[in-house]
Image (cartoon, rainbow, N blue to C red; front, top):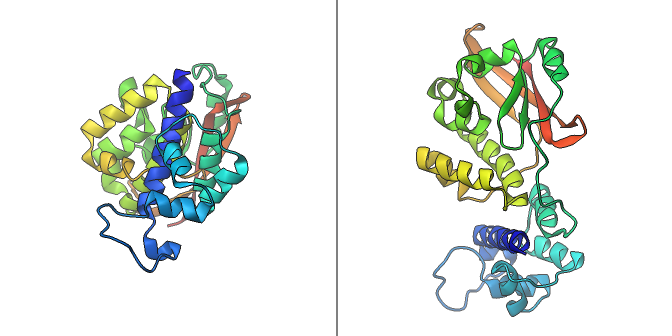
Length: 265
């Protein structure tokens, strides 16, 4: 029951964040009755667009235990003008059959390290927590020598926001950090009962005001290729990498491999 209530609250928070991002003019409300004290649409306006009662929609945002059909969720997604990634994420939060727990993330075959070592491009394997599990020598050059880092520092999200050497080389830093946080939040929201996620985010918010500001935007994004423009020490020039992800390693959805392929110099 606690896990169920937590997931309902996460769904409600996500709905509220998307409602606050949608301006009345974007939704076809050209006239506003009364002064708006908060940004975005009112709950009543979303309810009208979705074809549900204002009370029903309010209960969803409040995380109450109400029954919602897929059609209702789809209508709300259209009313909030969710992009494809946000729509899929909303359905995952709503789906009562979505797994509530994360399987053991410490069991992955070491043969993956041998596979990575044979790749010339920077390649890494991380778990849902963004912890680096395996990496090849080329990844050391890209990510500021992972071998030399302490285990508690060897998390992708900490690297992106707290490793100044790595950050100083990224040309499209703002775009890249926003994308990374959106992907991480898509995992976080699906497992709101996971204590590690909550504590990790709390610590990173304290350590990085930049991360906290982006985190509070509640953007979500599916794991997919994201261009990284970065100064590479060996090349002495800017290199653009296309990141290609492979999920479900060793029959576990909790790991994914990412290969950074240079597309231009």
